[in-house]
Figure 1 (cartoon, helix red, strand yellow):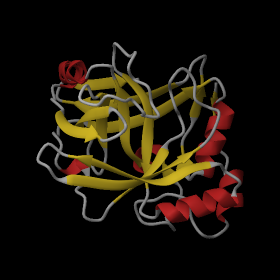
Figure 2 (spheres, rainbow, N blue to C red; figure 1 turned 30 degrees about the horizontal axis):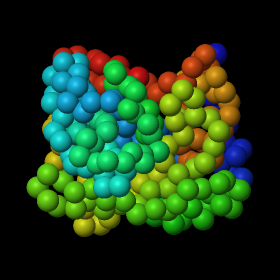
Figure 3 (spheres, one colour; figure 1 turned 135 degrees about the vertical axis):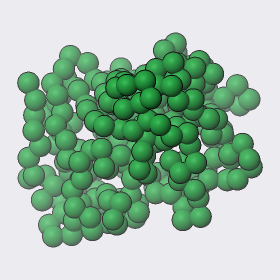
Figure 4 (tube, helix red, strand yellow; figure 1 turned 90 degrees about the horizontal axis):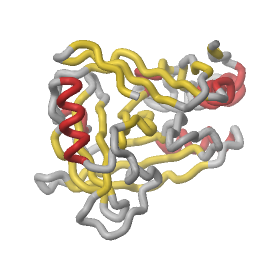
Length: 242
């Protein structure tokens, strides 16, 4: 059973001003979920294990991206075609505290835990979401030092909700990359491409409505558990991550 998106909540929020997010700017139209996506987060307790697992699945080896100072995490990256990428995220043993919003320390096997939606104007996203009475976390500044010493900078915005299940957050956070930061998709290993991104959830209607309100066009499948499912084309054929 599926719940196709309606347009009522979106039109109520947007009027004639366009969708909340967009690679074409804040006035862009509602986007399919695959176009709205900036990156997927694949959680794992051990980064080296995650890199090996992904290479076994796809034939592409993710490269270390660096650490998130103060969050207690580090990552490895690979491109998913276009301006999209996969982030394997794990605890950073060099940091003494773990303060990430996503606790991956108990994940012995990789799992898609959430995703990020791209925007070029995060303040406009925040303003419009507030007009729709959404509760927000941010915008917040973020940064990560690459292994070559270069600092990547961004801003993120979270939409607070009660739809997370079992460590899976189906509602994305928004990210706006600093103009002087190289997007990770541009210098990460290539070979994989995102073909399809799907969400399953026990409250499919509620998830679909909120995504629609945020400018994301998709169909959420009714399922006993929450899952984010990504279908990739890879050097080793079609691969499904969840």
